[in-house]
Image 1 (cartoon, rainbow, N blue to C red):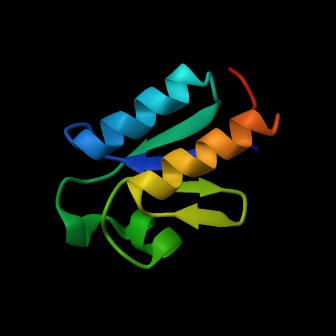
Image 2: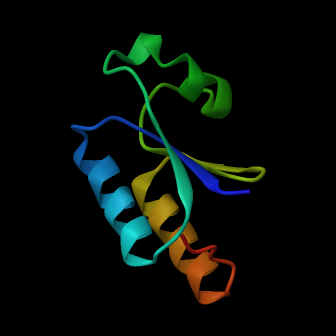
Length: 84
């Protein structure tokens, strides 16, 4: 099951996470959410808040860019990366 990244196209933090996923050749589903925070129902349902990026990896939900990047590094280095 691929990871899911909730993001918006103009967000610099989202760009960093998308680039990391590409650099590590990791498979994920990208979900572009509305620009207006209160309309981000999917994000709120998954994470309990409206900010992006949000990465859902199985039962793990990460909402901070640094935490997401660290998680991706750990997953990649442990051999848990699924490639495209």
